[in-house]
Structures are given as C-alpha cells and as structure tokens.
Amino acid sequence: MESLRIRKVEISVTDCYKKSWDSIKKHYWILFIVTFLALVIAQMSLGILLGAVFCGAFVCILQALKGENVVFEDFLKGFRLFFPSFLPTVLFILPVPIVGIAVPFAMIFFDSNSDLSYLLLKIFVIEFALVFIIVCLHTLLTFSFLLIADKGVSGWQSILISSKAVWQNLNVVVKIFLAGFVLAIIGNLAFCVGIYFVMPLILTSIAFIYKEIFYENRTETDSSRF
Image (tube, rainbow, N blue to C red; front, side):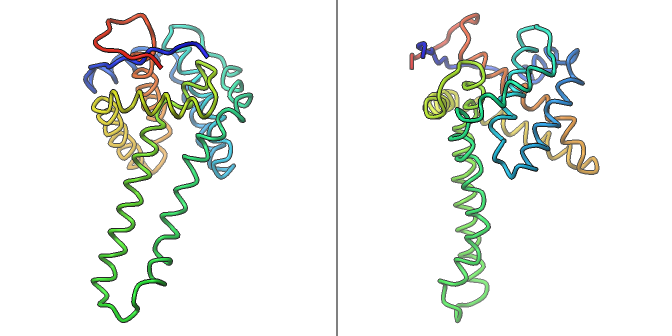
C-alpha cells in the first residue's frame, strides 16, 4: 500500500455542501439511482452487502467529484470489493442488534422488585451508552469504504486509516455528520421517501471531505503520514 498522507482540514458545513452539490448536480439522477439501489440492496441483504454497494456508490461519487463521467457500471465495481469491505461491514452492522437485546437482558438481570421508574432509568442509561458507542464506532469508520474503493486498501487498513483521519479532523467530520443527520430527518419527513433524494448529497459531502484529507491537490494546513 502506498503511503497515505492524512491532512487536517478546515471547511465550513455550508462550503462543503455547496461544493459537493456543484460537483454532482449534473450527475444527480445517476447518483440518485446508485444510492437508491445501494440502500435497497443493503436493507434486503440484511446489511451483508452494505460494504460492497456503498463502495460502488462511492466509486461513482468520486468520479463525479473528479469531474469525470459517471456510468452505472462504476457502481457494479463495488461487488468486487465484497471481501475487502467485509470487516468494516461487520463493524457497522453487528453492534446494532446489541441495542435491541440490551432491554430484555437488562429486565432479566435487574431486580424485578425495583421501582419501575428506577428500572426504566437504568434501561435508558444502558441504551444511551450503547447507542453512543455505536455512533462513535460508525464515525471512526467514516472513510473506510472510500479508502477501499479509492485506494484499494484492505479492510483492516481502512479501519485504522479512517479512524486516524477522523480523529485528526473530528471537528469537521462531526459537523458534516450533524448536517447530514438533519438533512436525513428533513428527507424522512417527506413521506419517508425524501431520504432517497438527499442521500446522494449526504454521501458526496463525506466523499468531499475525504478528498480534502487524502488528496494532494490542496493547501496543506497540517499533515501526518500513515
């Protein structure tokens, strides 16, 4: 694997989303189809193909960000990356059922004679702690599929590099994630189908930050080599 330089970037949420939209607007409908299929396939496969389809989606998005033509065949390249993307996929989907298991598990082991409000408080604290851990884990894996699709690194390498890049740019990544979360909520309010229309922009904003961190053609503010 070639040595990757990880840069510390500074960009506002507004600039990130504006530049992301400017880069993909002429490719919007093909990216809409690609991200729609990625979400549907990931859900229908119970998350097993999540890594492969999102690698394919990011291949298309990176093509758009580079100003190159985007074709559907680019999306299919993601299926060749099923095995490299499998470990990050497992880390994405495996912790989620734990949250659902935690409630009955807590009710079994907590004293049934305890006050109901106290019991509910304990369950809430456990659920909140687990959700927080999962969100932190998913955040650290932000660039894993991009690194696999773009740089050809292994699943384990993508986890390590993504975690380091996210930690070094935590402020920017969290802001972009929060903006994407708000955008997703707004999309879901549109009869629960709006999420499919905003997903190309949300994923592009992540890919845009990825390019800012890992690509050479930008002004460096700080950097380290992995």
